[in-house]
Picture 1 (tube, one colour):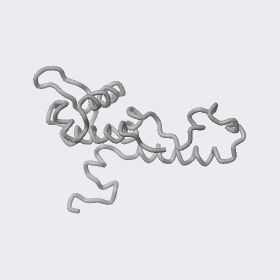
Picture 2 (cartoon, rainbow, N blue to C red):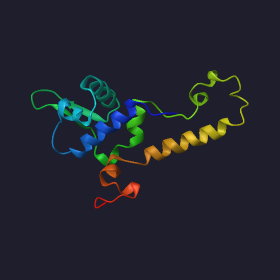
Picture 3 (cartoon, rainbow, N blue to C red):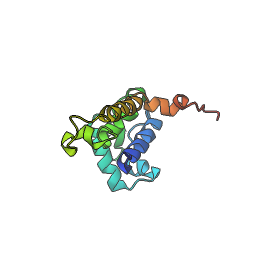
Length: 141
């Protein structure tokens, strides 16, 4: 299991929008300054909009903004919207991928690990990232 650029860039973009929450919509060009090509970023923001995590405002002063408060959006929400639910083994998302899926003795381990990862991602909000307390880092560090 490896997180793709969709998940990473989606999180970068959402963190940028969280940093600018309350400042009105952010133009795509400004969000792209995080180092993501605009065309790719537009696709990712479209996925995040369809998931109800961002809204768009059209017009000269338009752009993207969070659809909810930073504390109401988790890293798991963002990863689900950009990557889909994370799974440590293909057999968990596609039982047909393994002929031993029904009798596999290790499947429960992969399921436990996948659930633990997804639960952890759901426990970290954008607000936690802004405050960095969740990670043992203070703003003074």
